[in-house]
Image (cartoon, rainbow, N blue to C red; front, side):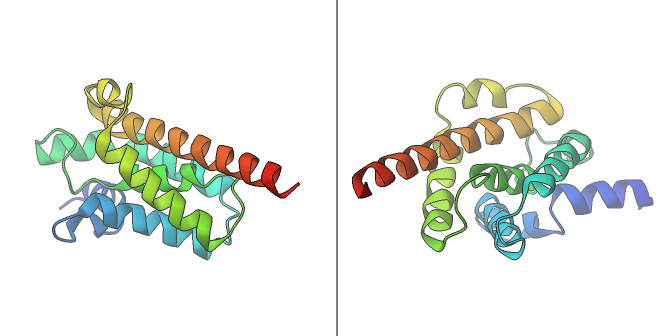
Amino acid sequence: MPIREKTIKILATFFYVGYLPLIPGTFGSLAGLLLYYLAGGKVVLLTLVILVLGFLVSGEAERATGRKDNRVIVIDEVAGMLLSLLFVPFAPKFMLIGFLVFRFFDMVKPYPCGAFQKLKGSAGIMSDDIIAALYTNLALQLILRFASLRLS
């Protein structure tokens, strides 16, 4: 396999996490959570890099596998998990809530996630997870605001 295709495969599956059995999207989200934890929550640049890489490689990986939004492509979940926790306090409770809420939104696909997922290539693969992540981040920000109001 040529180096370009191998690199796309490695990145799109996030170092083969996408090949873990049964629930690759959940494993991809856990990989994103682990990155967030290892970075100590300081993930602005990392999130941007993963998002850009996701757009660059996911469509190519989809074409290579011949399946629309193939389950092995999990860089979108990694990016989504990082985006979900962006600007959220680095604390285990927010990491757990963020993970659970992101997985919920990623699976349920509330409007307009489902519509965006129908787009072709990288846009379809990445955008539904980005929207799910934005919903998750909004939910976490609301929890933070309401919790701080109750403590005041």
